[in-house]
Amino acid sequence: MRRRKEWGWTVPRQPAWAARPHSWLQLHINSPEDELRLRYADLPKVAEECAGYGISAIQLVGWNRGGQDGGNPSHDTDPRLGTREELKKAIEDCHAFGVKVILFAKFTWTDMTTPRYRDELYRYAARDPHGLVYVHGGYQYQTPSQLCDVGTHRFAVMCFCGGLRALYRREFQKILDLGADGILYDECQHHGEAVLCFAADHGHRRGAFVYEHDNDLIAEFRAMAPEDFFFCGEADYDMEFQQYNMAYFRTYAYDEIPSKRYLRPDGNATGLMVAVPGFDDRDTLNKCLMCNYVPSYEPFFFKGRPSDFPLTMDYGRKMQALREETADYVWYGTFSEKRGAAVLDAGGCPHPHYTVFTRADGRKAVVVTNNGDRPQTFTVLPDGGTIARWRAVDGDWQEGCTVTLAPHTAAVVLEQ
Image (tube, rainbow, N blue to C red):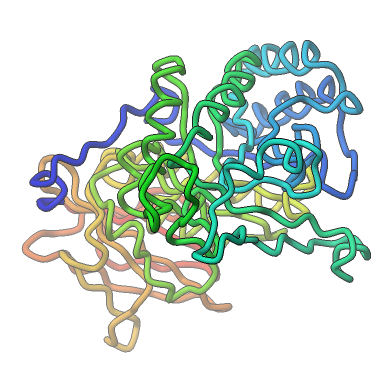
């Protein structure tokens, strides 16, 4: 943090709704294999359900012509899902339920299967020293043709150093015209195999650094967008947080090191969001509480609705309630991982699954999780302080430093 200040790095302003505790639903409505799932006009029904579960935003994937990972960098609407006016109206209707709409976007590469690439966009592709285009192999998801690598869309890695950014600004304007509340820029954090571009006609020196203008592109988008427009990226690298409000990624293991939260410990000035895909995904939700992550609910790997996994949503709502109740600590406070407290199990041995947050006035909160299949009792010992009370996600407030947790449950323990 000190180094960033010395370098003059800043963080962008958070929209008011995102500065508060919130959660998202990721919703997939089409793929590059044309799995049409919902029409634009159906979106408000999903928003109404989200509002009932306390979900603040829908990230809409596959809304554009070509579907997810198809047609890039086109951000035109798909007439098979409805008209552009219908999507704009659907976004307005979602707002009536208090639910924001974040549109999935992708600018890192161009779909090489499109006439637009063959006729125009090939000029802006990053090139190796031999003059060949850097190619990303594309993705295989769940359809037989993709899994056999038959229907895969190959991507040309694009060079942001030349005139491409002007074209991308026109694509971004299409998103703004729909009245969306933000974008999630998928794969903003890398450029595939390309590191240097050797094209002679892009207006840069040979061997220009491909990552050089990543932040410039988002800064140009910010200049076009309303002040409260939200920018989220996938797994942003550290410098990108000068432009992005939040990073989305996935977390798996109990003992996974929360490296991104280490890099950005200062309250929720920088949002971090993780996928919550399981049908009783208490452990991921506990990790959200431990590391100040925003849940991205993704039933059926983002092809369902909140009601499709009631166990996860029930626990998630309770976790959100506890987070809101203790927000001064676990949302707005400073993450210090394990510094400032110790947690011992019933045998007096160190328990590894806890984190510490420090409130603005210096008081601490400890988030403890029981990832096992049996109840466990822990003793929480803050450095130089005493415990006032604690509450489990699905329990009531209790006094003292001895915490008993049911399996796959978390608690917030507050220092006096």
